[in-house]
Amino acid sequence: MAEQRINRRSFTKSVASIGAAATVGLAGCLGGDNGDTDGNGLELLTPEGNLNIMHFLAGTNEGFWADEGLDFNPEVAAYGRFVNALPDGGNDVGLLEYNNLAQYAQESEELVQFGPCITQINSIFVPVDSDIETVEDLQDIRFGHPGWSTGTGTYTQAMIWEQHGFDIREENEATESDPSTLYDLMVEQDEVDAMLQFTGQTVRGLANDDEVRPVYNAWEEWEAETGFPPLITPWCAQRSWLEENPDTALSLLAGWSSAQQHIETNAESVVNEYGQLAGVSEGEENAVVELAESGDLHLPVDDYTEELIDSQWRLVEAMEDLGSIEAVPPREDHIVSIDELREMADAQ
Image (cartoon, rainbow, N blue to C red; front, side, top):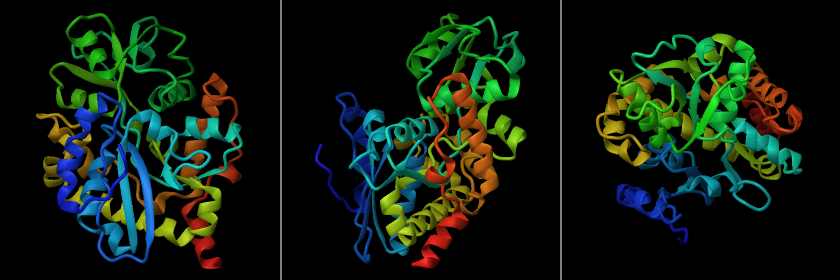
């Protein structure tokens, strides 16, 4: 589908078409007529069904990026297109998981993460009446997962290895399937004892506590371990673009920060208006509202410090220990803290 810019009144109609389009590999556009800008146009891809669609819809509709002087045009895309948007001639700015950053660094791509996006809320669930009570019980069982090469798979495998000392991938009889099928395999068919889920089915699990319960919440476990939750897809850019446009990057983060605050203080209305378009099913809205109001969906932009980056790099190093990535990328080449980004802008 050709990229296009649409006005904000057309958002809901546009994104609502994504579900049908996704079945044939197409994407829906979010980008908008953001009012008067100084010509700073930015394109960005975000994956289907991601909760950050709510931020982009609500934030653009409220004019947060236009207020920063940006003509910001997010677009919803299939996961494969999203992952490949940044490398070698793709978008200047995007969102990128650590495992993919490591892969592209091995291929000599000069990509730099520079800010926090949504946190990793994906969880491991068991049936509500299961004998599995702790993370240590997640061994020698029938374990369902949506793919070990995904960000969710590599992150969770690495966190459990780092915290609990066993490789959940190697310790279990595994079943790989799409998230909704996994849910049914466990709840309806009793074919798996535990399941690792993407965001949408994690929300479903949190909303249906009469069916399932979490035994591992990534954001709570990693924050207890390191002081910060894991970031599923930090903001990332081509190094050449970031070095030439630090002020624009800061404006992008400022708009994102405003969108975060808007959702935290208006969670119910935002989820009711945009939740379905972000993959939140009917009856599951309250679970997302609770996550948003508690602040568990995000970290403030000002928290993107060396201390936070330390907590994330422990995760990346654990991925290397497990062989999920070939090598840990040179941190100084691929990460810029918020203080460093501001120093880059001040130096221009």
